[in-house]
Amino acid sequence: MYAVFAMALLLVYLVLAGQYESWYRPASVILAVPIALIGPVAVLTALKIDNNLYTQIGIVLLIALSAKNAILIVEFARELRAEGKPIAEAAVEAARARFRPILMTSFAFILGVLPLVLAKGAGANARASIGITVFSGMIASTCLAVLLVPSFFVIVQRFEEWLGGRRAPAAVAQPQSPAGSA
Image 1 (cartoon, rainbow, N blue to C red):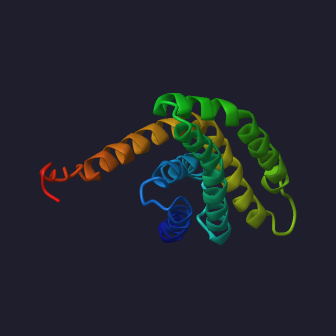
Image 2: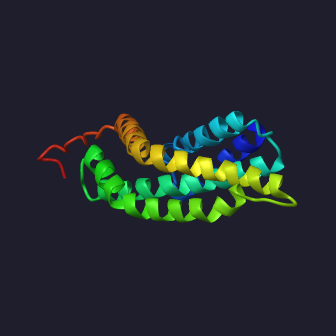
């Protein structure tokens, strides 16, 4: 399970690093992904459901969906920051502006996998494994990530700007030529 999770997380990170053209900016999205695993770990442990192939497929799907929710907030906050807003204000405004779209897509997905959770008959165990994993993970991701992703953005953005300030070369003073020389 951990190998699948680590490989999927690495793939998401590399794709985001290419998209953002930065090694630091994807960190605020990647930090939100493990939060989505709180739900499946708690529910699958409580229900004593085995970690099988369908559970792992659900975890990969959960990584993509929780990253999508975080990307909605981070991308809007980056745009606001580029417009000159302070980091914290940009993060709060982005979370506020993207709250409704995140809730709408998350609840649509949660209700869409409800038949898998309630599956009966042949193959019900396989459908229930993937359904419970994604159902509980999306609830955890939706509830927690909306609160924590703005904080992650603020921390990562401040670090990146601090690091960028340290790396900026100092202005080299050009020697003045004597006034009388030609």
